[in-house]
Amino acid sequence: MVAKIAIAQIQLQEGQRIVLDGINWSEFVSILEDLGERRRARIAYYQGVLEIRMPLPEHERYKVLISHLLVILLDELGLEWESLGSSTFKRQRMQAGLEPDDCFYIQNYRAMIGKKRLDLEVDPVPDLAIEIDVTSKTQLSAYKALGVTEIWQLKNGKLEINLLQQGKYISSPTSQIFPSIPVVEGISLFLDRSTEIPLSALRREFRLWLKDKL
Image (cartoon, rainbow, N blue to C red):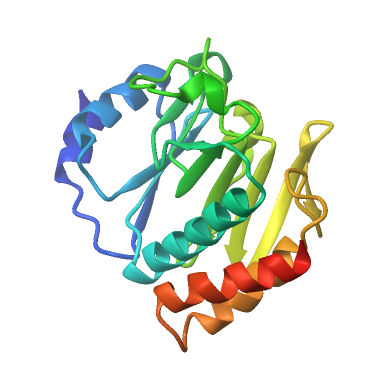
């Protein structure tokens, strides 16, 4: 198979990405199998266009920072949650597939407890996804097709929230899940602080900041 042979020959370095056009669904599934599950590269697929990207350490650091701050926010509010990290979410009917930098189930956490395999014909999509735009811009088409309602994107060191409303993503100053918390202000502030203090101290400071807001 031409697509599979080409993928086996690709050697992506950190920070690099490749876009392949004209990839049908069966080729996409074969490419996923060829890439395997134990890999750092992440994929996004929508209607024949496949992007494969290799994240930088900077990218991974920001992902961990935002995920940690989100977990603190969930815990302080007493909300139950599940995370499936960078699992592959795909739906043939929508010709879409993606692997978020991180993702969380909050309203739908019960459906994901103990989940070992994903089938979006019966399983819900994440309530919230995290995407870090360092070397490339996140393409939201696959997210829209799958119906992920809230995306937190890091752009130029600042957090941006996108909410799915009437079939398109709208930039929002507030989170739909945490409407009373100034999430954009707080997380952007502590991402700036992350250049000065370790994550352990950052977590403690964020918890104090959050208690003041609550």
